[in-house]
Image (cartoon, rainbow, N blue to C red):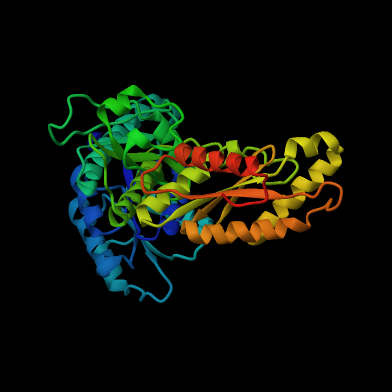
Length: 455
């Protein structure tokens, strides 16, 4: 959809994301595209670029009393009869007097708590007043092209705004819409720092789409969990931050990524601003084009014996915890727990007994942990624990409590079960695989010394 070439559109002026989503849902049967504005500044920008809407759905409770100003701006631009206006009132907001409604040419007012059906009926009546016809199926091809143009322009604008917001040389945007392939990006270099535009960022976008959380990679030379490093990334981009594009309905539609040719430092304030931009842009993109409902990420099956997540199912969770620790500048520790002499025990006992021991150890491990800690069945006889916000000294106390708790795991006579633990704290910027190798080596050393100890 591109209103500049005459296609009618609906303008939603609503600061509350849930109510904006309610308006978008109500508009679906009309086939009309919509743009979402959070405040008066957003409205001004949309009106300058796209002209007057055919319908304005506006909350009277916009920040700083801008609801009336928005209606006046649309009425001034569109004239008396060229645009319909529906004013949405929140609980406790004063109702507009009749003379004010007439002066502004308001078609109807509706409380924000009204039903979806009631809103659709009001919208239908308002559109009939303007004489707007709903797009026909024969217009689908032309509308699809205009939709693509509008989304592409939005992506370019979003990339430019992201570079300014984060004060970095480049930005890329990924969005998944019904008429697009998996990857479309626009890169905007604002300096002379590089001669190439990096389009080899699909891994980053897929990771954000999969997890729905921001990804902070300050230095790609030592990046954890980068499954398949792409030479183009390392040749051109050194540090990056990606935030999800979240639609008004809460779906993750893609990601916006900012990057630099040198290691990147983005504080919590800028990351929060980038995430807010992702939410605002996501609502606009969801209105511009029908998004494919991302199939919920396939959740890997937990370990069938212990019920804990496995290594394969936990990599994204670990990446998110590492990113959060970097942004918050908080410690992050790891504990690797191993059952001592497990191969001998496994050979001498029935499978049911072995499984019972694994379940018992996993239960004792979980009994010691906080709700924010992450326990993972990492290998046949190993459990990895991720401890956000915890220093190595406190993590050692946790490991000692685990060793104490597991001493009562049966069988206790013929072949008592003991465990060993390796503890480490990840310094800022360290790759996860480096820290994992360190605790693995520590655990092997504990086993060589006879087990039942902390290394």
